[in-house]
Amino acid sequence: MKKLFSIWAFALIAVMSYAQQQGSAVADPEAGALLEKATARFRSFKSVDVDFTLTTIRPKLKPDEADSKYTSNDNGKLWMKGNKFKIAMNGVDIYCDGKTIWSYNPKTKEIQVNDYEESQETFSPTKIFSVYKEGYSYQIKEKKTFGGKNVTVIELAPQNRKVSYFKIDVAVDDATNDVIESKIYEKSGVRYIYKINKLNSAANLSDEFFVCDAKKYPGAKVVDLR
Image 1 (spheres, rainbow, N blue to C red):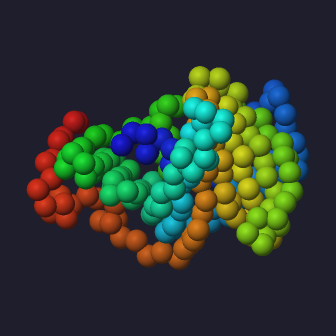
Image 2: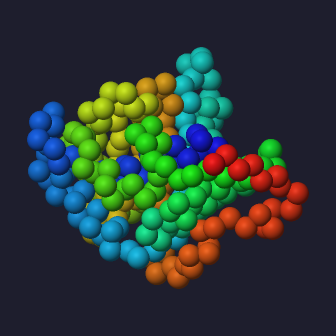
């Protein structure tokens, strides 16, 4: 559960992160301007409904083994409204109304309830609007065609060496300033590729949508950890 939350959070960091602090090792003006446009565009959405695919690539144990043996693909959904969000992937549902977070795991048939807190270790979707103020180096990595679109890939490196990843590649659509893919490089050798398949910026979401109703999960045990 926590891993799913963290993976999604890293992807969102990649969507909206760029460094503004002085003293960055690399501060490419072109990359910074493009990331700022992407940030402004995403912040203009009052609510969003996103379909995404998360590809996980694990290090091979033997060089001659097939790539497919170490690659998995998972489809998921994200809904956001202000400081509220919901994530759904592989039967796991995470709700947050800005104060409380509920996590349903179908394997354990439990709904865990916690106070909502953010930390440097685990970012939430709502932090995408402030994380850019933290330290990142950034530069243009390459320009290429991706899915028939002209995109610019920006490489970001965290100045905080304690985080579990050492860089993030962000692909931005040159025409729309939309982020269409992010690739997270973990120090463990695992790679996470997050691709936005569809983004609806006109979603009409009620506040109640972000509150977990235990009745929707028959037989689930509610574990209140507050």
